[in-house]
Image (tube, rainbow, N blue to C red; front, side, top):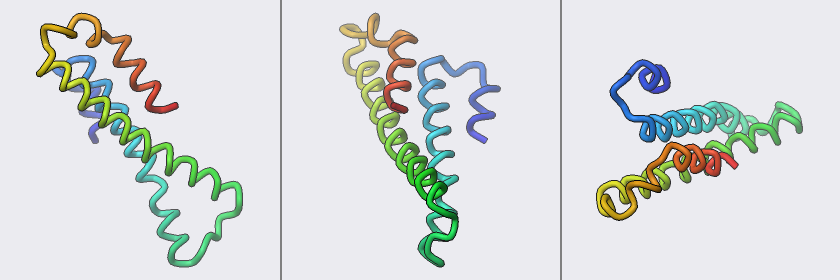
Length: 106
């Protein structure tokens, strides 16, 4: 639902929209792996070795990218509120937000 709202809401600026969209995608990836983990804890792993590695990889990708994106959002808010006059011109550009989101996924 958040992804649809982000695409339809026009008043939200680019940088927060970029962070929220990436956070929603990483949370969606993380949430998609939870039924597999519930099945694992109830009946042991019944899906095969490939799916075990695949689900584990997506679990950690979703988990760590969420943490990094929330950290990037916090740093961005710090620069905006506290260091508004000092660092506003260079660090708040679109390229910086895009680069931060790409780094969170890698």
